[in-house]
Structure formats: C-alpha cells, structure tokens
Image (cartoon, rainbow, N blue to C red; front, side):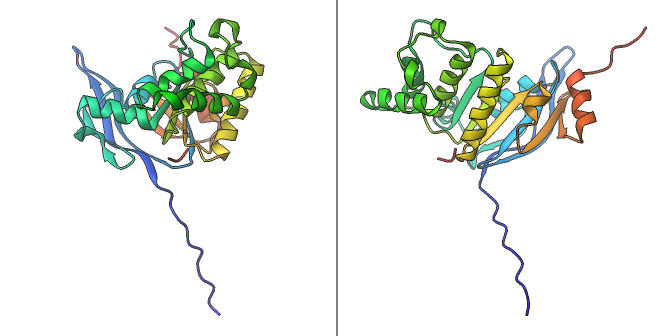
Length: 256
C-alpha cells in the first residue's frame, strides 16, 4: 500500500520584494538598502532586527509603500506597486496597511475612539460606521474602559494599544510595527507582545522591526539587517552581534 505524500498548501503572498534596492544620491551616493528578496505570506509573524543605522528605517519605508525603491520591484497583494501613481499608492497603503510606531503618533486633544476613527477617514468608511468600528477594536485590545480617555491621561502601554487598534480598524492585509516597545517599560512591553501574539493567532499578518533581541525572538521567522543587507538569523550569536552593531575601532500583520 502506497502512502500518499501530505499536501502542503502555500499561503497567499501579501508582500514581496524582488531585488528591491534604494540608493540615496550623493555625493557620495549611499546604498541604504541593497538588492533585497523578501516574501511575506498571509498569517506570518516576521521580525526584522538590526542596530541603529543598519537600514531598518529604509526597509520599513519600502515595505510600507512610503518610498519607492530606486531599482527592483515591490508587490503588495499581487499588485505591482511601481505601476501605481501617487494617489493610488496612497489609497492602497491606507486600505491594506496598518502602522504601529514607537512614538504612538496620537493626537493629544482627541480621545481614544476619535484617534482610531481618524484612520477610517482615509479608507472612506461611512461616517456613521466609524465610531462603532473604533469601539470594537479598542475593546479587542483591552481598552473598553478607556474609550473616551485623552492620550495624555493614558499610560504608555495604553497609548500603544490605541495605536494598535488604529492600525487594526481597517482590517488591513499587513501590520508593520516599527520598534513597538521602544518607549515602554518591561511590564507594558510584555503586555504589547502578548497582544501581538494573540492577534497573530487570530490570523493577522505581522512584520515587526526592532533592535531588541527579546522582541525579535517572538516571531515565527527572524531576519537580520546590517549595512543595508537583509539575511536570515543564524542563531543567538548572530543576533547578539547584530544588536551590538559594528565593532568599535581601537586606534535595523489579518487576512482581508
């Protein structure tokens, strides 16, 4: 009796870089991102780790459709981003990408619900639906008791949860997190990492960029960024070396 080989189904590709590179003009020119191949599949939790100056921010801007690569291609949900004009690229980013930043970027004079609702303006969500959607995701991230709170009255961890809710509200194909725990204490960091893990278990596709090995270790797959080059992690020693940066001379989210 012949035993059939198990069928392995590959999940759809959300984001793909094909030899994507970004060179800033000089003099001298700077290769901030060298030709990079990267595939992110739906439901994946990818972490990218690198020290300051490694090229993480440049990579984030390319992944987030904020900067166009000077060579190579970027595909998002199967769309060749190079084929889009500025308005269409902005619309794609607003509808299918969520961003979480180290500094939260919340408006201090708008309450938590209103801050989340602002993300829906760019997605053209009908005005009557915005508040209920915002409240739903705020409850999802554990802030049902802080719906009307202003950011200055929130803790750092609560502000980051509002930012995560804002990133979730349009049900994006991917969430990009840039140092999401960089401004948090250890207790708030643990809360945010648990929340990200829960969202991933619910099917969210996540890319987290960090300099912290403990944060980078949370993903399913880890890549290292150094000198504009993205490469697979090769074990704890490589991670520690990348976190430390170059030696000092002695004389770098759910399905729709």
